Image (cartoon, rainbow, N blue to C red; front, side, top):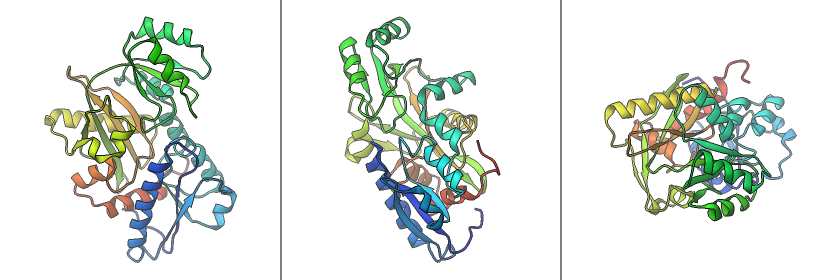
Length: 322
């Protein structure tokens, strides 16, 4: 791992007004606690929780030396905070503006990886304000029911659901909340799987495959945040060739979007053997019981070491990152 500067003032950025705020709070508190416990070992650093809600970002330059990003969803994972920190010349963990924006915009992400020959569920984009009749016609002609509906720029399965018919499609699209545009995908049954990628000594390294099972209709927000609503297996019980294929695809997706330092790529493992990519998370959750920490532990990496690797990504970016 890169040698960190001494006496670092680390701002663990979190919160804001994203619907994913609760997960962000859990990530930030766990990461800050880990850093505080490693303070002397890491050159006397200090770690401060910095809530983005109502924050005047211009004052950050005098307050912190580096930002560890634990902000998920809109405003924290879509390139906006990354661009602000670039302008303020404050180093930060993870990906730059372009990779963050591509990863957050599912429509653009799917187009980018499809152009590179990577499988993803067939989809219909639904721009903000598009009449339901136009969306319905596109869904019927290109996908057919049932379909899976999710916000184009959201995470944690918030606002997502399965539509069996016109009425359910309309209900999901009109309950937009903070989300404007949507993606409607072909509905596929299967097992949720994910692969983390973490820079280790500057080398993007895929972690063991993580699979999750739930009795709910799909791997939704509740299943992702209530440990009693899911069963996890990591390393996943998969044939070695499948494991390797998933890890290599995750690494390829990480590189295609231009991600840096850390990411998590989500898949669906179907009974037919298809393994489509669902999305990439360029600011994956950092809670101690989250997917990334679970995968790191399966690789023999304890949580403190994972956080050190994540922190180091702020100092290993190329001189210019789009």
